[in-house]
Length: 180
Ligand SMILES: [Mg+2]
Image 1 (tube, helix red, strand yellow):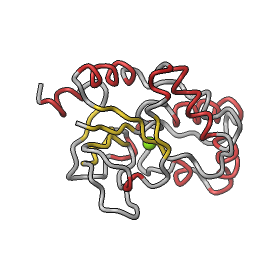
Image 2 (tube, rainbow, N blue to C red):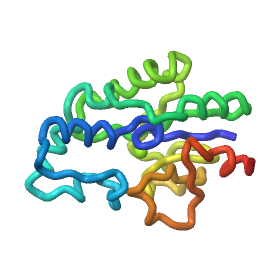
Image 3 (tube, rainbow, N blue to C red):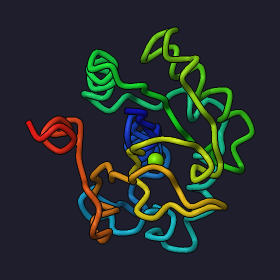
Image 4 (cartoon, rainbow, N blue to C red):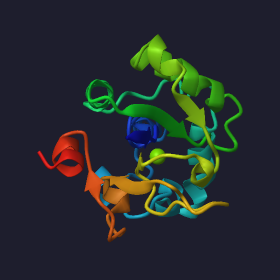
């Protein structure tokens, strides 16, 4: 089994870090609880007057390097590897952040170890990457090709409107993928 694992919102806590920075820098302006998130792009739930400030945070140098790890992700990757699966990380760099792509490699080395560095695929279009399964928090993934993988959604409050796809978190991935 060849499995592809997304980074932001799956292994790295993009939104947790973004909102923590927002609250530190702009307290008493606008706030949004994680459970209130309904759209994939967090900026769409921010009032227009605050959106540029929010973009500035995610476009900043070191933003991607400093993302906290989502608990259970590393352990899940190691367990998948132990099952004999071919595991790759598959991430789309955020256009607008000029250092984010290289910071993703640094993040992988720091949080997952040197062995995983060589498993990172940066792909703005994931449909052209081959695999059996792609675990991704984006509700809809489109591109130039008909994907070879099954899209399994990594459950987040902002992707719950997506129906008809298997859905998991690091707490229950074995039940969903192995029926355990
Ligand atoms: Mg993602």
